[in-house]
Every structure is written in structure tokens, then in C-alpha cells.
Image 1: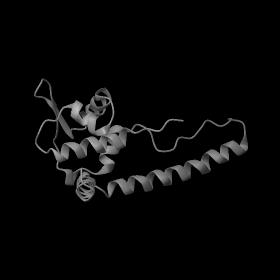
Image 2: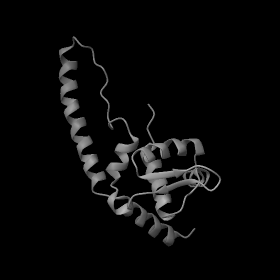
Image 3: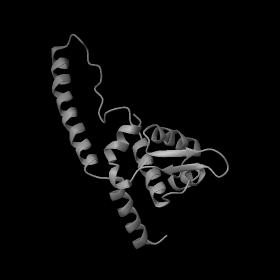
Length: 143
């Protein structure tokens, strides 16, 4: 079972862009910070452009630029822009098993509550919160 890193990478990208506020930053520079392929960065940037969090400019002087105030961008907004699935997915139990039917209903209620709690945590934090903490920790540790 694979786990998605899109959300974490999206937050990293947006934090990087926030640190370079107002400037266009190349996907190569972002990819170096994220430690991933520029193609993967461009895919996530496309999602962030679609959500209108970022703009992009083609060409040698182009790149991506943050277009939203980090104070107004919640982590939940970012999560919803890049993730398509809920954190837990129910398997398909045998349709004629009465126990399976009950487990599916009961477990889905737990999944729904967990999703709601996770989303509340993300709604309570902004990109600015993450950026501020990242810069603080960076300055304490040094480059």
C-alpha cells in the first residue's frame, strides 16, 4: 500500500515560494529543495495553479510564484487542492456476509470521524504558521 506525499510536497513548495515572496522560482530550484524530480514538482504546481494559489510563467525567466497571502491559506485548502482521496479507504467486503456489512458501517463511521478531526487540524493552521516555524527552526539550526 503506497502513501501519498502530494500534500507534504505541496506545503513544502508553497513554503519555498512564500520564502521567495513576489519572485518567480524555477521548478528545478524547488525540486532541489524538495529533493524530488522537477516533473513531480511541476505536476503539483499545476494543481496549485488550478487552485489559484500559484501562478506560473513560462520561459527562461519564468517559474512559479505565490499568489495568495500565506495568512489566508489554510493547510486544509492545500490538502483539498492536491489530494483526491480521504485518509482511509474501505475495502470491499463480501456482499452476502452479515458481519462484513456491519463492520463496513461501523468502520466507516470511525473513518469519517478521523477524517473530520484531521481536516479540523488542517483548517486551524495556515501556510504562514508552517512557514514561520520552518524559518525559525532553520535559523536556530543554521543552514
